[in-house]
Image 1 (cartoon, rainbow, N blue to C red):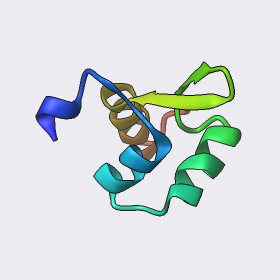
Image 2: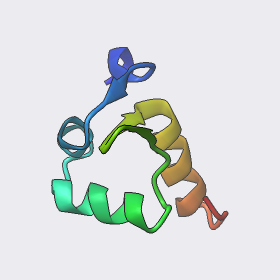
Image 3: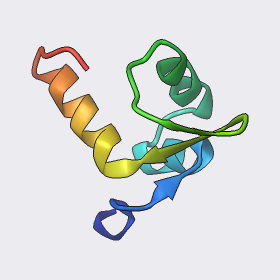
Image 4: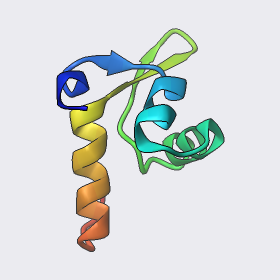
Length: 63
C-alpha cells in the first residue's frame, strides 16, 4: 500500500485498500470522519490523510 499513499483514490479504491464496504467509506465521509476532496459530485481521497485520520481516531483524538 505504500506506493498508493500520495495519490488520490476513489471511494471504491479506498474501500478495497481498507478492506471495508464502499458504503462505510461514503458514510464516514458524510459525517466528516474521513478527509476527502470534492471534484464536482465525485469524492477523492488521499490515502495518507485517511490513514492519519483513522490513526488519530483510534488514539482518542478527534478527526
